[in-house]
Length: 213
Image 1 (spheres, one colour):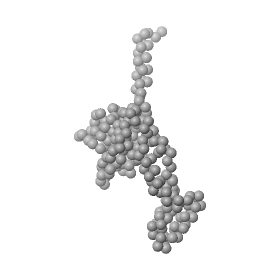
Image 2 (cartoon, rainbow, N blue to C red):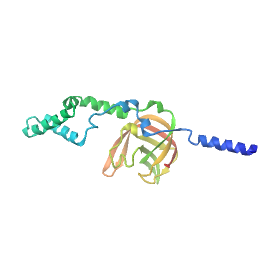
Image 3 (cartoon, rainbow, N blue to C red):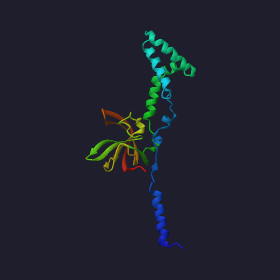
Image 4 (cartoon, rainbow, N blue to C red):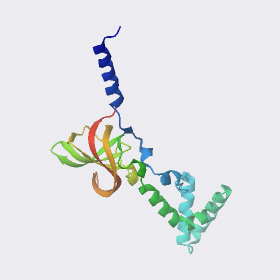
C-alpha cells in the first residue's frame, strides 16, 4: 500500500513533468502564414534546363535585334510548349508574381502572436557583451545569412535573451523559448566579405535559450 507522502510525491512529479514543456513547441512551418503556404511560385519550380531556357528567352526579348539569340529563343519556347507551359504569359505576369512572392515571404502567422512557445534553430549573433551574445537572429538552417542568402523574413526571429548567452558555434542548434511578437525590423549581419541587411518579421524576448537535444 502506497503511503500518503509517497502518493503526494508521485503527484508532484507528474505535475512537474507535465508542465516542464507547458508552452507550445513550434516548427518553422508554423511561422508561415496560410498565404505563404498556398502561394506557388512557378519560376522556383523550374528545372535547371528550364531556367537556362528562360535565360535565353529573356536575352532575346531584351535584344531582339541580335539574330544570334533568336535560335536559342525559338528552341526554348518550343521546349516550354512541349511541357505545356505558356512561358510568355508567365513572363508577362512576372511582376505580379514577384509582388505575390514578396507578400507571402513577409506575411506572418498572426495566430501565434502573443503566445509562448519553443522554437529550434541556429544563432546568428548581432550584439555581444564580451564573450556573451546579447541579441541574435534565430534561423532555421546553420550558416543562414552568413554563408548563404538569408531566409524569408517570416523565417527569421530577432531574439533578445533575458541574459547573455555563450555561443558555441554557428552550427550548434538551440531551443529558444518566450513570447512571440510581430515586428518588422532590419538587422546588419557581418559576413565574411562585408555587411548585409537582413529583414525579420518576428521578435522574441527569450526567457530560455538552451542546447537542442
